[in-house]
Length: 366
Image 1: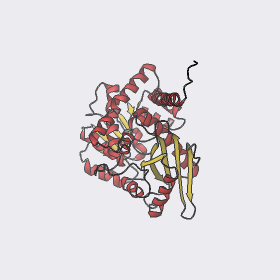
Image 2: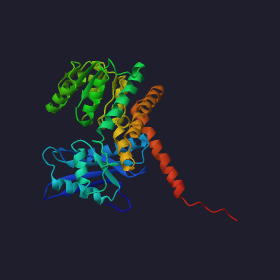
Image 3: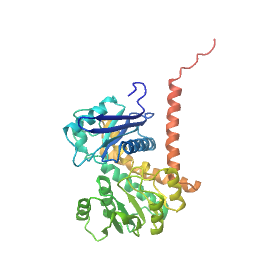
Image 4: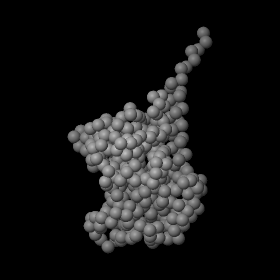
């Protein structure tokens, strides 16, 4: 790593124990880069690197739009989280993070939970999950889900003139930490029907036990795009909105896509966003609707954590998203493009302000 410029993608390996990881630092304009540790068995290192870099870019946009003083970063660990976590891996991850000297701060993501983060917190100070005044939240998933539901309400208001979830039908893809909490909130708000799927069948069974009404229907992962629902709620992996799946959503009559998964749009994302817009499917940009987690992280890093104050800021996701949707409709363009431009404008304003502050003023001629 360059001492002068930590931006970029940093590759780490432990040949003896066959550990592989990447940390991407996309932007430090607003503050240190914060992003979750994602662990899964990638096909190869090129796929892992690309995922890490794209996720870090999304974190930059997410922090900017949420107006938190954090930059964009991400860590990807190559491996099976169910089988390969051990003390050696925790030490390896902590060493990778420590090498960046605070320019990257780790949070939770797919395959990595709050307990994992607390364990490596004994080996590195650069983690978000620490006791706050003696009270520790489970992880960022709860706040993320609260923000997603607020975003879903904004989408429904934009499309149908009401923010009431009652009676609307949802197709929920993925019942992980955030997806499960999102689904439970939809259920408690009397959603008309919730189609659910997950590649891990135990998660589906657990969800069905918590939400036993017959309004919940378990479907196959390959048919989730074809169910007769109003809102598609992607809450698992990214890259699922392709030309093929968007066509299926349109054929099924979906009104909108609004979920917690990162990087939902297949690449090139601008093209995919335009496809959604052309099919008259309202799209909630993922880096807007799923920002509850980074808002929660920012509050914890500030060391004055207050759950109620944090939740209030998370609920602002709803009005922020509604504003983006309305401006996109007025401009007849994709909300994804509007949100991306908003994020870049915020970052550019901050860069200009810093440059002005740091540039020595020429003394007046006397």
